[in-house]
Image 1 (spheres, rainbow, N blue to C red):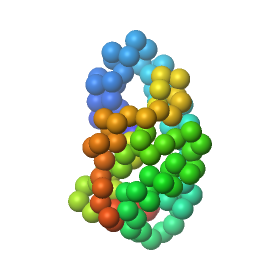
Image 2: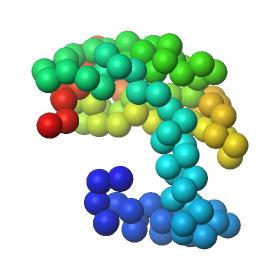
Image 3: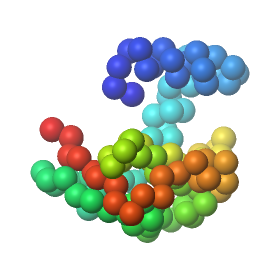
Length: 116
């Protein structure tokens, strides 16, 4: 989470009703982040690349045993990749989640811009 404002928002919206303390909630959030392997061909490089939402989902599924395409959704803002949403159970196992998958970007070309 890149900013204190976003951290506060996540705690108020999701963490405060989780039954966990703030520390436990953010520890669990870190564990969830660490559980997911970002495909190397998507996380490296110094140039933008354009891939279909389906290709991005496939790369994550291939890199994360147990993940299915029904448990991941790519969101776009215009032509740019905005975020990758991955569904996990309370025990941090991958799970399907049609409600998130339905909202995903179906663009033929989402632009991935390297972080500098």
